[in-house]
Length: 246
Image 1 (tube, rainbow, N blue to C red):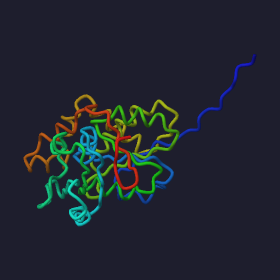
Image 2 (image 1 turned 90 degrees about the vertical axis):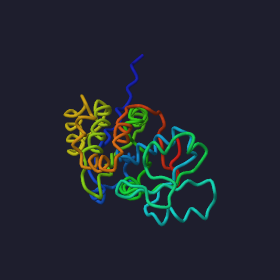
Image 3 (image 1 turned 60 degrees about the vertical axis):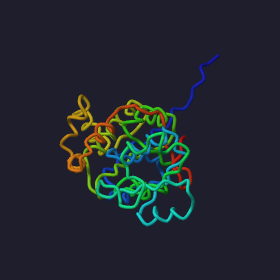
Image 4 (image 1 turned 135 degrees about the horizontal axis):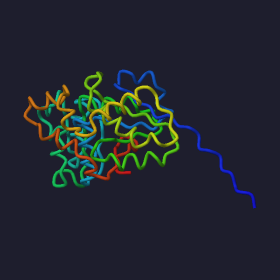
């Protein structure tokens, strides 16, 4: 009997958007989008979903978040701007606020300076998932099973480039690049950045501008927490208006 020949799987794109300001250059509807905001939104989302949050609702504006006060007692309202908790809200986007004692069984409504902004600009994507060092392996394992183009969207800082999100994108590229993907130049650059920093990511990212902002706010412990690899297996995915556990 002749050996059965299976067609090769088509080459998929693996691309990196270095800042939300560049998203208009991409047809996001052709991609699975991974939202990356390492310091701290996507790290906290992954940790919250791992710790039993029923859902996290990302909203763009503080006013949208505040409007949920009238919708029921089961909502926790989280709002962050410029690294600080917005006055009058339950908490911001520190991962230490997303413990099982606080979020289990609850729905968190979240708005942040960068991460939720990037997510809303990506709403037309085929699927949106959340990436962080906390769920790096779980994320990459799932992405390998998807026969789709992948766009890693770095939230950056107020539409500008930042090191930590790009380095994480490079870590994802590192795990996927041996597959049947065509990398764009930003993906190659992100992976090169990861090669520079991978031996001591914490040390390499000490120089980041957002890291400096957080240090001035006295929350260096958040930085160290967000750089832990594979602390969780949760993969948050957008289902309608809510991020839920896949």
